[in-house]
Amino acid sequence: MADFPYADRFTVNRRLPDQGRPREDILAELRMMATEEDAAWETGKCSGTMYCGDHEHYAYLNEAFGMFSHVNSLQRDLCPSATKFEGEILAMALDLFHADAVTDGNPVGLLTTGGTGSILHAMLAYREYGTKHRGITRPNVIKPESAHPAFAKSCHLLGIELRIAPVDPETTLVDLEWVANNIDDQTVALIGSASNYGWGTIDPIAELGQLALQHGCGLHVDGCLGGFILPFGEALGYDIKPFDFRVPGVTSISADTHKYGYALKGTSTLLFRDKAYRNAQYFFQSDWSGGKYHSPGIEGSRSGGMLAATWAAMVSLGREGYLKYAKAIFETADVMKAAVASHPELRMLGKPTYLFSFTSDDFDIYHINDFMRKRGWRFNGQQYPNAIHMAVTRPQTQPGVAAQFTTDLADAVVYANERRDTPAKSSGIYGGVEGGFTDEAEEFINAMMGSMLDTQMSLPPEHVG
Ligand SMILES: *Cc1c(COP(=O)(O)O)cnc(C)c1O
Picture 1 (cartoon, rainbow, N blue to C red):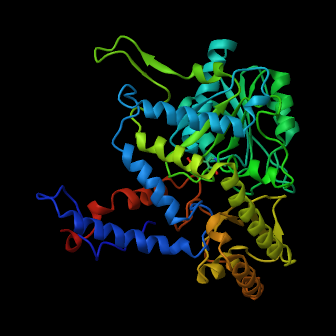
Picture 2 (picture 1 turned 90 degrees about the vertical axis):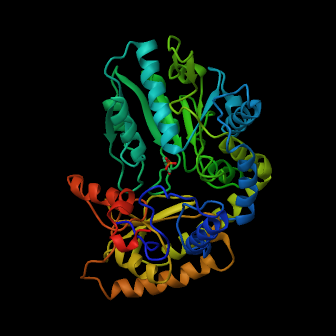
Picture 3 (picture 1 turned 180 degrees about the vertical axis):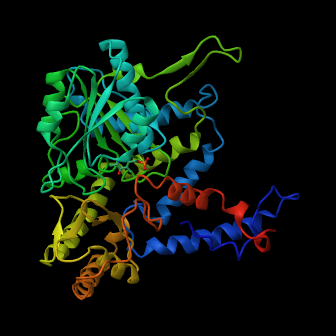
């Protein structure tokens, strides 16, 4: 459940205050919360989520954001800058994913508000393309079990049937035979991850591409997480097979600028091999009394600040900057993975890259999580099998962090060995909120979401100002 550490310290607003408060007070209150919350990950002991972790970089992006934060990028006549930013972000991303290698299409892109947004727009594009060009009436897509829940959410929203392909428990990669046997004439797209969120492993994209070509359907590569780091890992000589437009059959790629693109939270790129896919999802209404309406994607108004800040992140780092950060991240991940491999009680899942996940066949792996948590580490818990996941980001590349991981992990293994026959305290939930649930526990979800969204209404009266 969500925490409310501020209820006792700051005024709880249950209604719009009658009079406004002085800005200095408000900013001081915000600064206090931000500073305390940043301290939790600045140590480098937090998996994922803070990809850059560099306050100078953030300050620079905030300056860029601030110049355009009030601008609605839908009103292009007032902000031709948005056209420059958005077009260049997409051009740079297309270049990174080797759109130049495409001979069977006109590569284009779409900027969205996050990974989920990119996946939702991709699924919408495949559904609409299928309707328009293939006469499909009951669309389905096939995703590896390991692919992100955003695919299930998108299919739920868009009325697409989702077929879930099993993964090989040893390699963690999608079962190609299952995929091949479950494609039919209503399949609009296959899905592969580069990499998946859970284990950091990369599905056999070339093989999926061949299947897509044989059956005349699309192949979406989910590079939300890996998109802005794997190309640099490849350039550094790590064993990363091509997953981008160089691979025949890959028809779209999602890659989050707000993860390893080191932009602010709130943007992601979606790239298509051919503009027929993207164009299929445009919405426009020409007969509204409010005027002729059109928007590039599902969102209406978007802040021009997000475009400016994302653009500013990319052009300030350049290839050299991304490569330098990737090198430090891959090297840190190598040290941490070696620490895991040094314990026979621990088992790495698949062959991971910049992020890894491990389990144990000897004890409840969450004992490791319980112990590491006491040492200030925050990992993400997983299930089937129970495992803990560490996405290496720039905060871990600070001196001493990987060495601390090695020491703390060794102590955690001793702790877990002493508790072989007992269950652990923590469990697997995405996003670090405490508690556990099964699919049936709608009640639990309602309570948990309520604890995040409705708290100010339900706090006791003594907290209310
Ligand atoms: C983060 C992530 C997503 C979803 O992205 P959001 O930005 O959280 O909406 C999708 N796929 C993968 C592999 C991810 O890591």
